Image (cartoon, rainbow, N blue to C red; front, side, top):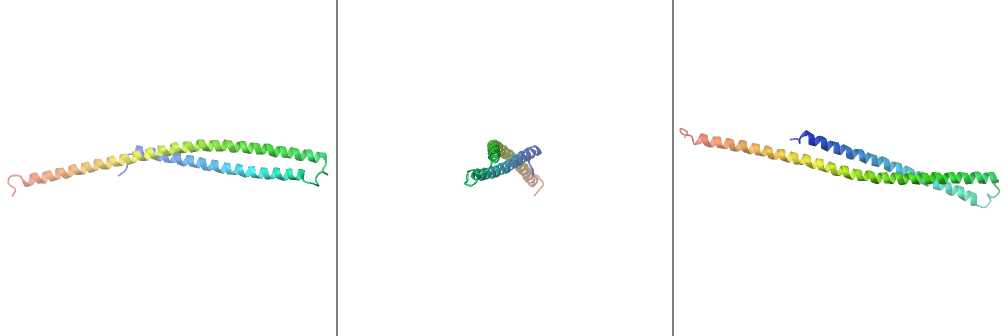
Length: 151
């Protein structure tokens, strides 16, 4: 026995929507992990350059080299700010997507419930039909046995 096609189609669509949103969430998680890895690399690079500039024995660099290193550190710092901004944006998008997933899962459960209710209704109707058929058969047999001329 199958539920009516409209309910199964709607349940399948709700299931597909959940899967799409879960895939989006997985993609966002990968992006966030990539951004976090970039952040770690940039922080390490910044620390290495900062240490190089402040460690003893490096004061013999020319003024031009010092300016270039400071500019490079500013660029790293700007990139780090951008990566942090992107992380925040991605985290907010993930929170929104989680809300969408919750709503989609609720819709999926509602559609599955409708499919189950429809199946239950169909089974109940089938049982009623079977019972009516059995009642009619029993009634016929009763009438056949009690007809005049039957012993």
